[in-house]
Image (cartoon, rainbow, N blue to C red):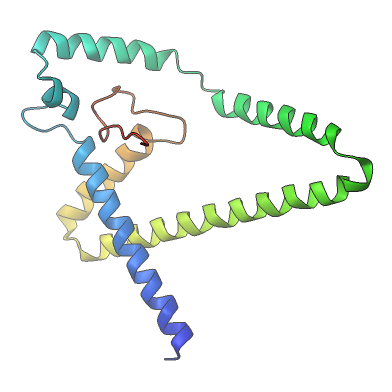
Length: 168
């Protein structure tokens, strides 16, 4: 095996293991524990009444979540890009369009790489599990698609996903 092939295999292995680890950590954090408590319940030491109130608050907030948020965001981005394009002199327009096209291509390629690494890790994870474990894993993956989709927070509100992070 040549060095380039070895590097690709090693990189794939590391990405697969990392994705599997992240999936496992995310699952562990998002799965209720301590008798059904979320991390927020534990962190704030919420009473059962407060837990119910929090569920109601966040359930209502999630119902108000706009399912067209992604379309609206893309519309705003297009509006912004069009406004910027009007500022670009005509002789620079082709260069500007190329920059935008190159950026879009790179972002798409990154998305495909991330998706492939995740799918590879899922497949490798399936291979090491027993039939019973594999079925539970499939259920977890299905829940994850609905609970942590592309459009926002888990439907159960804060405390059911990983603790929030801050950039300091």
